[in-house]
Length: 122
Image 1 (cartoon, rainbow, N blue to C red):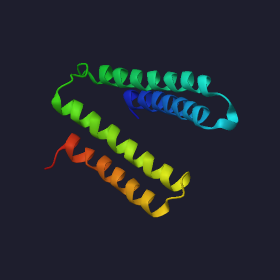
Image 2: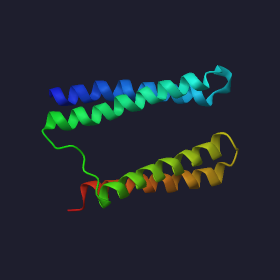
Image 3: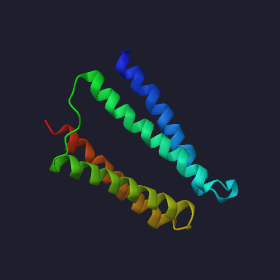
Image 4: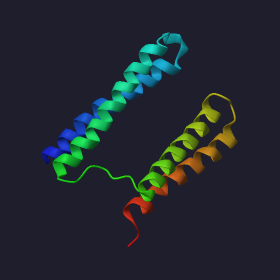
């Protein structure tokens, strides 16, 4: 395993776990840890962003340049994740099984659209 992949794996795991635990702390009222959850999730996001910059530096690539395609890709990723999350909430929280599955599938399709957008078709 290359050094850059190992560092990315470690930072991604730490950041992802911190973010997930922070979200659980925020969204589970039984834990009574909303403010602490926000802090833990924010630390997770910072670690994930640091991973992105460290990875690009180790690959010798320049910093991320925001152009129209990058902003559109980010917006599509955010929209897809939100639609998928709403579908999951519809199924698990609001007892709307069929509609929630359909909304979740739309979110999955939106996220799948990222692959040809980022990698391109050959």
